[in-house]
Length: 385
Image 1 (tube, one colour):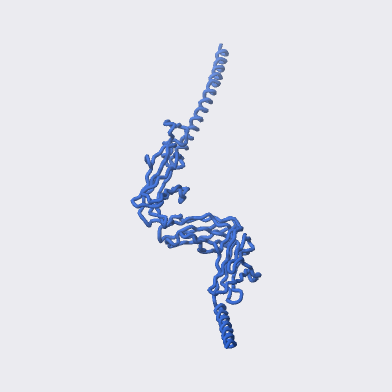
Image 2 (image 1 turned 45 degrees about the vertical axis):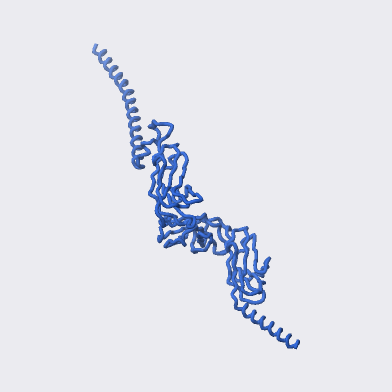
């Protein structure tokens, strides 16, 4: 009885091993990186091998081109910590179980910060209506062979949006659209060289792409009116019939799309004040405001009607000087009229100086001529006598 029982147990154990071997042989492993497969230079990354098999011992391999580097050991059965990373850590990684299973699909670990960051800009601008397109341009003074565009959505997850080969110092243009809530968010671009495809530059400064027009527009006004004297405090008020979590104030011109300030409160508000401080001529310009909700940070309302803010004159003097090029009357003139006024003033001054110079010459020349004629007349009279 006992020998028969032992034989059955041995047979069952062998069959189980064969079953697990067959399952493990065809099971597809997966390899992930935390917090991201794009790792800044000097930081650490954890690679984790995932499997449904009860066997929890794994091996990690790094492939550098066509070479298969030696096995890397981890601190845990399925976790492998790399770092502080250098350029040598960049490459393609796979994992497999210690005895059975095919290797996982390769995972590319990219080390960023090896080169200086490129620049990114949005055309025609970072505020886009739903359904429209926007072009993101990546460019750099470094001669990169390729630019890579990454997108961060509202959940904070980064994903590679696209990559583009380029030659020399040519920029790369990425067309995004038709714009939806899923495509709005924060974008950054990287540059890389052909000889080291897993070593990237530092990320560019972020550019936020917003969708506008999904809710009613607020209204924008200036306390005390849009005409302000220099030195007076300037406060703009953005108000709405809908209660927003946050209001945004933007200025057109040089600072188009830049957040000048933000009004936010724990509860939804119907208005927000934006104190700009003592007014200066630099505050003059066209302003607009928008409203948004915390649950959709990249979705803004329609734009308010434009507010034309003019800061002129001075609070300390009410008598403008004729030599001051920034007087109130001249500041109200268009640029072309101001240039014509300067030209007329210069011609007038030149005419006055020329007239004075000619008058001096005439006055200096007449006495000499009169004296010369007098002497000749005296000589004639003496000869007649």
